[in-house]
Length: 231
Image (cartoon, rainbow, N blue to C red; front, side, top):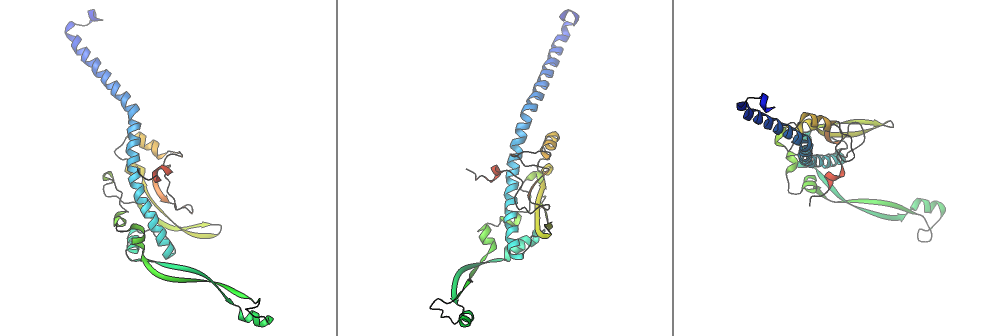
């Protein structure tokens, strides 16, 4: 080849070949390491988001226990936590003579007569819902915010309503955020694959969510690995 290429062009061709090699090498590296780095990024971001979703879930469950339904409004949820109280109760079983029945049968309660069983519930005191759930922390005031800079101040979508099953209506809620928002600075092709994910070890679907508007379900759609305590 050299005899057909002017000698002065050899250095230029060598540089071009090296550039092509570097570009191909980088492309190969990205094709291999791109998904690996993507998975690392998504797991870190999902973990932060899930912590907030867990706080939203426990707050909604407390709201439902006292108010009898879930709420789709974060302001109402925070106000509830600021003011609501749980009743601390004591349950006692007791029995006493069934006077009317004993009289009807001519029986003596002390000698084989009838007794009534009754459950007595005593209210001992009241405790703050906020303190019971969050202790001294005030993170519940910001649990609606997506805890990532990439989210640029966005908040979770929160919905509540009724779901009918077996001719009975149940209160339901759902808090969610789109994966595309959490990963908006990543490779679009990898984001698209992630949104269509179906795996027992991954977060299925296009959102990270807790609760459901289409089922009686207050769990999250993440795998148990995200519930493992940090070492």
